[in-house]
Image 1 (cartoon, rainbow over the protein chains, first blue to last red):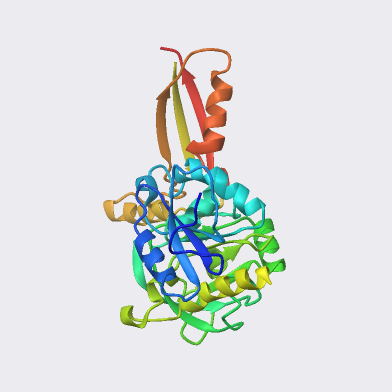
Image 2: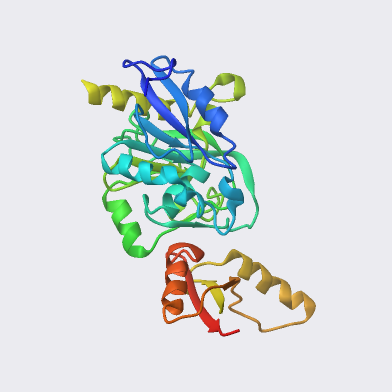
Length: 244
Length: 79
């Protein structure tokens, strides 16, 4: 298969997966294309092969209508077997919001989501503290930097058992926590009841990442913020370093 | 044959819907209600046979429930 016209060997190639009910796919695609040296293309949920991609991007939305549980049906899409292989081979995989829920249901990340503590859909700008800046997803941030990134979800209340939480902590797998504007992680600053105020985690191998907030929505000053850009810049830097 | 599947939040896991219902019941005069848990009920029909119970168990493990946060039980009803 020929590389699409928007990518070349020099660029960092993001493959944005489109499921039935994805609704942040176009935002994600457009945002990636604002980075010099990066290019996005769409991957269809029925695709069975992932080629010419450096980072698989599972976008936000309501895949399969959120039927049964968020992400529970999407995880059986044909492309998810390819995503699993891609991750097993060390490829970078990111899931934002519904994409995070899909990665949890697929078992590519540990834990599970349930309904927000307040039972409401929450759509607002929140503060996050960068807990680990030594990963391919956060290297362009500084440790304990406070960033503002919006959430928009009804099931963002992260749960994991005590043993799993201890492993996340010990391995530095918690990359973002909800915090107040001063960077303090408090119950009041936790929008959804998420255990440990967790907003984003990676797997033990460090190549699969999920977060509930939407960095692609604050990656252009014209839409009100740029705090999400460093997330994508981190991935681009990481891929380029890997080629050296 | 019919399977009746009951899915409930695991013990010890916060159930925000249950908590909200629990807080509402005293307003209707029902005092002393506690441990309200909200789950799902799923009915399905499948071919009868020796493997039916094992099949429904696998359906629950793999799709119908999320074993990290939910428990399930089911009964098989001959038609």
